[in-house]
Image (tube, rainbow, N blue to C red; front, side):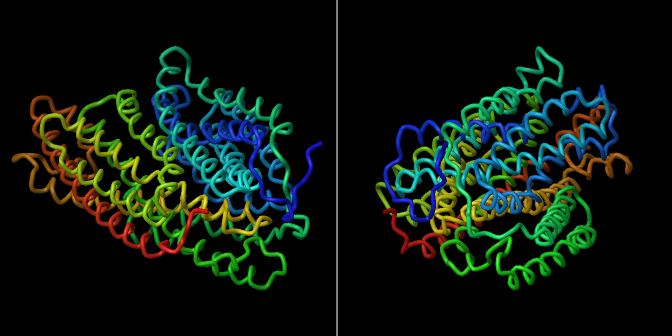
Length: 509
């Protein structure tokens, strides 16, 4: 039976058992992000068979990430209390069972419910695995390498998700996509107890249910408000939707300050290293998620690639993130973390600038080169920040710290999609007004102003005159993307400056 380590466990080199265990941990992390991306290609097939409404289709795609974001903090803290390996095993079991349920869904509401339960199970994976790494790899340099591999597994899953989905859908019905995680989760259940250590905080009290409810009630409305803004709702409606979450957040903080054993120990934020790292992590994922959405639409709606072709051309982006993650320990061996963070963000900003050069011949190659450079540059930030957060947190709070890291990633990504997407929408509408072909009837103009997707649909029904409408929409979207990329470039350079001054005293032991 595996012993349960305590805070007094001596720091030493990891053995071959820990490194094999890391490989086991990486597999569910890869599937976690694959599940976020693999479903997009199946949307037409699901629509034909289940006939969901527009709102139901939106929730089929979005509910997984939505529930993950709301449950991370509770799951991370729960792992500290009941055992991180135990929570991971429970999550893997649930993920496999609910994946089968999703594959058997006979209606849109059933599929939405299954995807929501998948999100709940998926929320156990990231904080459990990262906090287990903090227990398995106590030596700083080895932990950094382990976190690099952990980050790379997420990136690889996101990169291969569309490709795997496209290949499977070429030969099998859409339901098989939900069965992909089952054998991997079963393998985790078999080998996990033999290779992964157990850790729990023996001094922690019972889980405070009121705090757990407040944490979910804080995150979900705020994420929903951000999503509404990203989807084009008015700022007033988005703010009204997020307001209950803000109110619950105030109550949550007040409750944590009065509890002897809070769900979230706010004293962690007194550590400058943790607070600064979480803030930089939010900016990092703000850029990553916001840019990926904009460039993916450009590939399909401006360059005319199919979803599978866009997925294949996105592979260099994902593989660049994998390479950047795995090279992080090498760079940290040559320079301090502050320099790696600063240099990585500068390289990311350079990649963003390269992407603004699209528009002429070879635009696809320019775009892919720029986004690959961007990914290689930003990957070390995610790795170093995750390592800093779990390394600076008390051992008994590693699960909660890991959940905070993941929650900041979710908030950053959602905000990036909302704000950079809103900027792109504003510039697109403004540019289209000036670029719209003469003689365009008002009803078609109103449709085209909704976005390039709507403009493409409208153009397809107009025959020869649709070509000029589509050309104007594509030009407007290109200008919108370039503006958003330049804005993101400026944010990346500001973040690079902040990273240098915030972390220049940090050393890699």
